[in-house]
Amino acid sequence: MRKVIVSNLASLDSYFEGPNNELDWFVVDEEFFAYARGLLRTADTLLFGRATYEHMAGYWPSAPRDEIADKMNHLAKVVFSMRSPTLNWNNSRFVSGDAVEEVARLKQEPGGNMVVFGSAALASSLLQAGLIDEYRVILQPVLLGSGKPLFPNVRERLRLRLLRTQPFGSGVVVLYYQRA
Image 1 (spheres, rainbow, N blue to C red):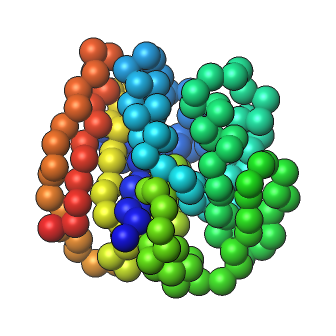
Image 2: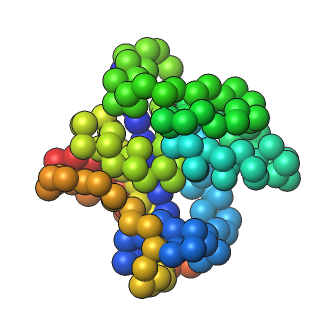
């Protein structure tokens, strides 16, 4: 069975975007890029909510060519939304139905890992449905004070088990969790 991995950056106060959608506080250096390359090498599908998809589709097709850009541009992409996005990024398809049902179906198919980047509402719904196999929080050494929470709409207590940590020289720490 395929795994679903959620990989999201977060401030120490649990926001993945600033109050005005800013992302300029992310620490992205060679250690971060090495992490991203390793994750993408295990994946064959990316899962997105509409807003994150549109943000990523605005960057990756014209990004400087490297292993990360090549993977981001060539992997299959599934976009979950109630309204149809403009699908202008290679290998993208839109799903307007139940994300939980579709991801459960996709998990049964052969293939590599499926990765959710950003898309906090999608990630939260999949987490509550028990479809996330691994949750990676890339903890950034910053406090934002406000913004968009990493875990919106979680309605019940979900116990997680820490699998391992990966500290970077920049102060960033990747926390690897599974549902307990």
